[in-house]
Image 1 (tube, chains in turn orange, blue, brown, red):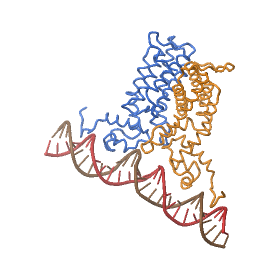
Image 2 (cartoon, protein in one colour; image 1 turned 180 degrees about the vertical axis):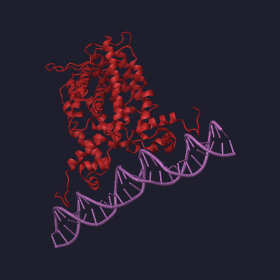
Image 3 (cartoon, chains in turn green, yellow, purple, orange; image 1 turned 120 degrees about the horizontal axis):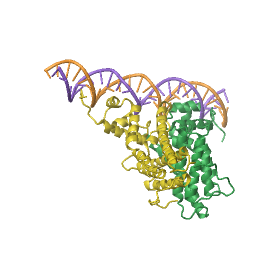
Image 4 (spheres, chains in turn red, orange, brown, yellow; image 1 turned 90 degrees about the vertical axis):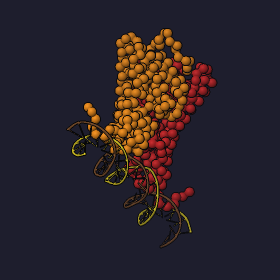
Length: 213
Length: 213
DNA sequence: TGAATTGTGTACCGAGCGGTACTGATCCGA
DNA sequence: TCGGATCAGTACCGCTCGGTACACAATTCA
């Protein structure tokens, strides 16, 4: 389909990226349209024409975030054993929430855990997308049980909830300014705890992680 | 000091309690003055006379919250061993973030992890008060090391960071609607993991907790 | 070249924001 | 009973919010 009419004077993808960062830093309600248009380098009518509304822009930003900034989760799920899934998830999460070129923390939490009643849908949207990730992890653990990689009496949902709770706590810590090295320690503690409680076995040929406790 | 002038027509303590719940449910920026005055049952000038400003009201609400809703933390710190400190902290935290008569989650997170730049002080205030709690827990663990209750090579700060990360993750889960029973499972996993990693020993005479994993 | 189409920029909309001036009402002490 | 002090309620302040109307610029197709 050849384009008709005046061509767009900005890169929509790049503008969305700028909006993502504003939402990440300031949350949904804390990010005003002025903040957004200033960061995106466009005027309001262009924003509305390209993205629909503030809420639609936010949802598109979250979708983009899930695709590019949560990629590590898919990478983690693809590991061969439950131990390595969790190790990858926790360690990569530390990197993701403390990337020097990005806002601290995690958009799906910074975006807004609590909202005014008229924006309750936004908080609900974020909460359910987090829980969807947790369900995926539980499914991965179920598979690990079936493969004999986790004991038969392991509770996949409870283990997934534990791991996700840790990552969420880490994200909050990162947003509060806690350093990457400190979060790394926490991740190793959580990983060792996970292994001890779940019965997941680390791969034998791998260095068992720096000494923590 | 005998009162002079017209007496206040409302209970300031009860009004603060109502405000606390609004902030808890909607966050600092999501709670408008209209929301607050409506819930408190007073008019705006009364609110400003009694509490100063929206931000001062919020800080007073957080102080009240720390005193009455985080009381369980002081109770936990008073336990005789590191294991019991963590057990109490994690278990009571589950109850605190899922009390049926209160908003779900934790005010110090729901209040606002991200804010507009003009309200950045609010998010910073919440973050530093959370970290202060973590420091107190680390101090408690340091004492446990000195008492021989934790191994000499245990890292109090890292262990405290782990435990607080779990409680924060639990609070976020609760705010997302996860049930108390589910969070209880997670707390037991975290506790068992903590014990395994830190070398903290549960009291011998106590039932070692319901079977988890 | 001109009609149709689409994006840009300005200027504006009603509504709600946090915060306050001011008028009365209600208490105390004298 | 009256003066000083404090609180309650209305009505308003300037400002910003999310969102849009409209004139104009830039492009394609006929």
